[in-house]
Length: 247
Ligand SMILES: C[S@@+](CC[C@H](N)C(=O)[O-])C[C@H]1O[C@@H](n2cnc3c(N)ncnc32)[C@H](O)[C@@H]1O
Image 1: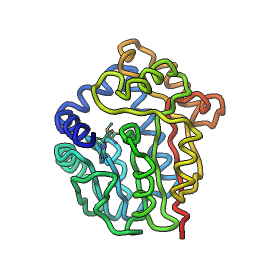
Image 2: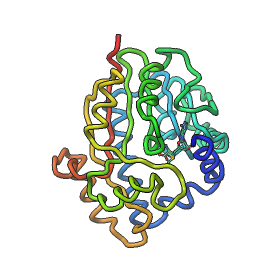
Image 3: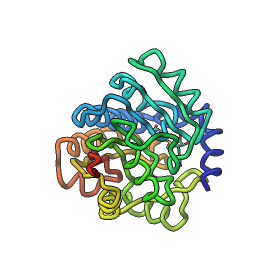
Image 4: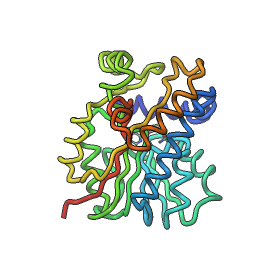
């Protein structure tokens, strides 16, 4: 299955940004999401030696390299890593090291990084507990972890049920799973990572992003960022900031 995901993203690397975030709704949702992630990186002190797992085409990496003394990038796709390194090199404040590797077997020493970030990757994990224990292994005690998870009991419930049944993403033939918020809490607890704060994230599924829903998306993302419980309760994704607390 990992090979199928790798092959998918190897082909996707050249067109990833062109195909996504292109309509007004898609652009609005991506901008909201990136702004939220940047705030969370600030608030939860993501700095030092930072590992990003599944960097893809580097839109989050751009924010990470500006705040880290060293950036380590892991992705299954060498094309994604090449693309990202070229994209972010100039903005980087420290060295960037890339590893073509699986998140299930990170080629890094135990407790060797200060922070781990992984965005829009957990949907591809068939055994997320293995992913979480690798994250917990490589981050030092007290280090920060920022991850996001698609949530099925949310505004997009019908689509989520379809993904759940097919184990496939909406528009793509690639493995995808959505989580319950309870399952996510259990994954953190079992891995020994304390959840400090969670945030609702809204995006627009590509099946409907041709309709301009950018204004409602912007408003609901603002409410979720301001801490509205209702907006968080039905958000199709949760962004979670945690701390490695296993000693
Ligand atoms: C949906 S993209 C997200 C890219 C980027 N984080 C973003 O938000 O724009 C998922 C990325 O995770 C990588 N990926 C998926 N499964 C992986 C695994 N098991 N190990 C390492 N990378 C993985 C893919 O190759 C792809 O580049």
